[in-house]
Length: 77
Length: 232
Image (cartoon, rainbow over all chains, first blue to last red; front, side, top):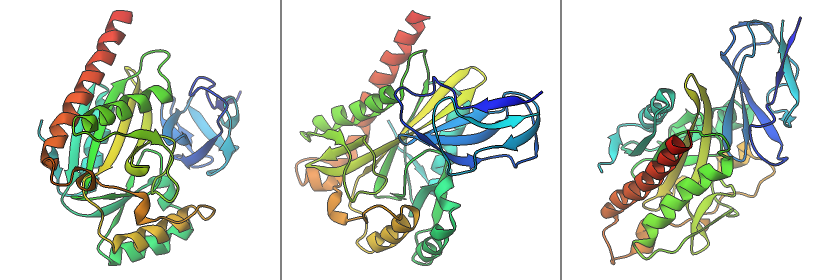
């Protein structure tokens, strides 16, 4: 069963969009729960996205993609 | 308060990140001896930026990465950095972080009779809504990094203030990098910026400013963390 990697809805207030500035693990890589796997930026604030589970990472939204709160940017199986 | 003097901007940035990892309230004021241009790691990876990076390096301005948001920032003796590490209480917003650091800067500058505002500044480097402006020109820029630590979320809130005007020869180098990183933006203009020494003139000693800034930052950080403990 896949665990979705979701942009948390409480990361910032308002409806500003964000940009994925980096994936710190490759598509298909094995990641561990809690590991830092991506960074997103909004309003000059860099947020860390950590793996919600251990397993194989599938990237759905590439680096530089514009994302909003609640968007699924990848999954872990 | 002593300003930490690092050899390179990379050393200062590494110290900031170490404090962030520790996750405890902290204040760091620092500058670097060697000049450098600091860019977010995400910008540096862009292929279009690579030519500008090489050119800057040849001109004596090596480009180094940082892990907070924003754009290109000149580092070296011309720039004073303030970094605040703040464990985040529930309800703490991005804007609260910017109010915290801009408030500390404004208070310290007011002690030298320098009135400031916050806002964007067209043609300024690393522009954003939370610049500290004097006479409508950019004096300091701010950015943040939010970290999910084992003890809870922690923010690194950072400001870079121009103590002295950057060398004139730097502007075309920075402008080229900026245009490569942000193709749709207007270029950089030296006149959009102002330095502390421009504002102080002969009235005061700019070397006394870091102490005033440290006190203002410490007051705000102590107040914030005390409120957090009481709320807990």
